[in-house]
Image 1: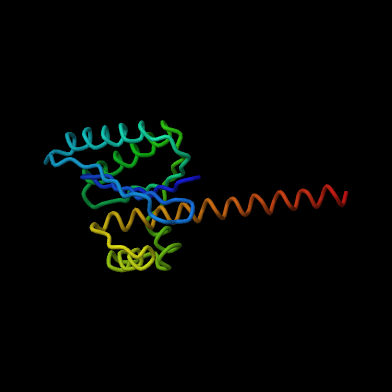
Image 2 (image 1 turned 135 degrees about the vertical axis):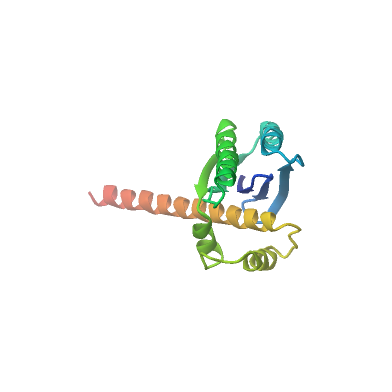
Length: 172
């Protein structure tokens, strides 16, 4: 069974939502640290994320929201650092991880590339029938749904391509 992981990062935490094959939420996991200094927070929650991934043994595909440009250069660099580490650690543990622009997953899942936080949370709560205690978990759930749909589309397209190849061989 394949799991689909949606990951939403900030300079304060990593939020993830894990979906099963059927699209139901298996778990929500958050790694954070309360230090006021980014460098200390970063080392701690990235180390915790690394340790967590080292303990799991599942087939999974992940998507992480790509770093966005923030007016404050220091914040932009911090966010990009977290996203880069998440991508690396997923690959380290054999989890294919793709970055996804926030306007792309919002357009594909919510239907609007500039969907607001309220619209995202409302969609997630209606879709999964549960309350999301934090906005970042709603975002991560939608990102997980996006990677699940992408995987299913690629699988369908691959099967159609194989069928076309078979038809060519049998005609030939």
